[in-house]
Length: 430
Image 1 (cartoon, rainbow, N blue to C red):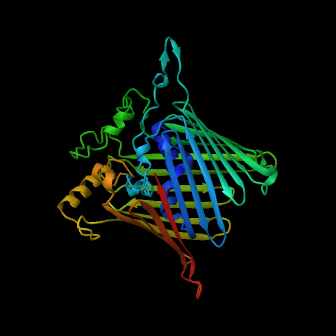
Image 2: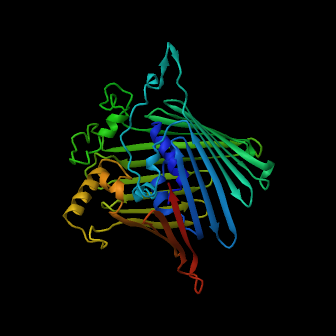
């Protein structure tokens, strides 16, 4: 289940037109969401609020044998729609987004003059920024985040952690990211071991900045228009770019100045785009040559409500290998209150949801009417299993104004201790 503060940060990215998918760090996001999801342990309660378009707060309480909690506060200079924060008014996929991340066609960066605001002959525009802080109790660990958009193609992100148990009392990680559409790059520095690193991603195929590319003139609103209209189901704008798939390659290199050690990795991804007429799928291959680890994954949206994924890991030095498989299944509730029994209006909504999924809106399983009541989604089931018999089960749903997730970690070879952990997580926001 997506944390409320993560949801607000994602809303900031969307409002500031930052593409989170065009990064080497998100190369394997789909397979990780389907195979590496965490199951709750014990009881957790989150209460959050977007009290104004610029300020949000969140409080959490957890009981896992010991009582713990946290206080979180967030400020953004970019105005966010406050009515889109309450659990009662948001569809379930807003807090439990679909794991399969459908890539959209690349778009050119915003023109610099889009960011200019003039008054009386002087520029008065400011760069959007986000500040976030979280205090963990009773350990008194402090976590902070500073995010600022420097230009249409650049942003800086600074993470800091303060804890007396960490070396030097904490650490700071600074990251400068560039997104040019065709390629992206990130430069990072960490005070932990004085780590320096750089990573990048290159997308093969048409360049959105090329005047000869049909997507050159598409602005953010134009890209939104590529999604079929929910009232008519029109697909008129879909496929104007002609590109049905994308092949991307990237790499990262890092080196610690203090411990005199480094590392690197490289990876490729092939994914279908909304213009693809068949089932959407994503394939990835990553390699760490220094450690000798090789990982390949295949993820597919096998239906409107079903996603499947598998991953194979292998080490060329130790010959150790691992296999893990996972799935995600969304369940609809019939209008008569009985799960799985759909009438004609439900079937119509399913067809319209299918059109929107094919158009690349990965989290839009509901139409505008469903966004208000959220009654068509009964919940989401996630499951995974690996070659050692470890099973993870997670169910995410809603009870009135509460969003919840319950799960269990099971070891099929554990004998008497077959269940490793069970948990329930509740979230409410206003």
